[in-house]
Length: 393
Image (cartoon, rainbow, N blue to C red; front, side, top):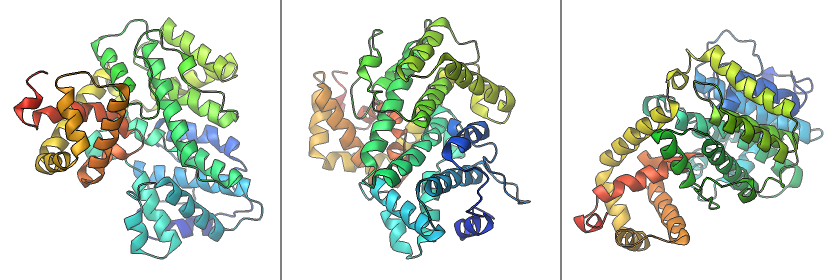
């Protein structure tokens, strides 16, 4: 089975005895996904072994891990399910997530074959983009958020409702918790301060204070009652607090407090931290991001360069699209002479995302986790516009 060629989904489903999957539940598969690196945004192995002599790329491993998790979720949730119904359910699920018809509508118009549609959708969802991101934190975060698809699919199957609200809420919670985790560090250098501000200004659904007293009171964790939801939040936060040194006391206290908020024992918290440390130590040489002595510094510099290059390459189209967006132009003009309100900043973010959707090269801004790059886009925009926008900077 080759996930880079057409027909791989049908072959995957043919090769597996769906009545006797290697794992019987998502709970059983979860630790395997974590060990494979899928939950950490970089698949270094397969969670479910395949009888194949093919050497898979990281992108192909990520595709297989994502699809395996979705298939296991379907057959665990739906009694007497079939491979055909599984594919139909997945296509319907992703059509719900595509609220702006920006990701998959063009894909769906190309073929009537549901399996081919799903292959193209999954290919769109897997955004390794090694030549652009070079496996920095943005790359890790984008693909680490793929497990949201799995949990949202389970929510969709159980409740038979549009999953977009659930997916958006979980993404919001994860982003906010990561911000609080970064802010818990006792000693922050300049780049950790920048990273904290970047997370704080990237929140799309709520507003979190950038003050040091920001707390769990500003994040709604009560809605998450399933153990998998809780463990996923814990594991992604453990990844966020990792660096090349020992976790400091502030971060340890934060992780224990997060475990308590999620009603998880300290054993689960320690296991989550140990799993990240073990994964990093075992695969440090394979994942370039973990080789940097200061990942926060690398993240900020690399993403700044990436956004700068993308803006310069799309300068003319970006100026044209911004100029045609009257509300955005008004907000940009007013931002040069006064501080925008929270509502105006939120409106400007949404307007910028709409602009990015019209320029294919800027699609990274609308991917899961892409909102983290949005403040950097705002940083570079004034350089493109007339001097009047800069005179009171």
